[in-house]
Image (cartoon, rainbow, N blue to C red; front, side, top):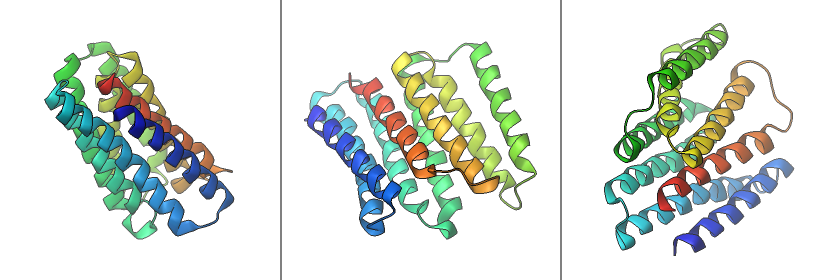
Length: 203
């Protein structure tokens, strides 16, 4: 079941990227985008419920994916950008808890390096922000913490880094300067990141 769902999610992700890049069938592309993350959620959930592998860990990661699906929908509309960021922030909290339960606390050096890097990027973005400063700061803190806690396992760490890069390019495009072929770049990194994070707990 999980391999069927993971394959389905990969196909849905590819279709979403193609539609976004061609800028056609906007409503369908939004639906497929949300369905991609929901399918990954179902893959992790089914592995937890039916196979009972690290049940609590997989449930936490599954809820992280579910929060991501909600964020996927919100981020399609400019007026819901902040709620979308909040949904992904919640997802990162679920990921951190799941990774902590599975692998414990990462090295102090990794935590400091990632938090300092994230704070540096926030300082760069800060001059382009208005009232979103606190929300963006909290989000950067959350995703950097998530990347740190994923660092114990290469598959999860790869996914977290891809997710982080996706958000970095998305925020740069939104607040600093438009990026050519943004959807191709951001969505490819994002879907690959979510897929690797899912694989890190079901394999």
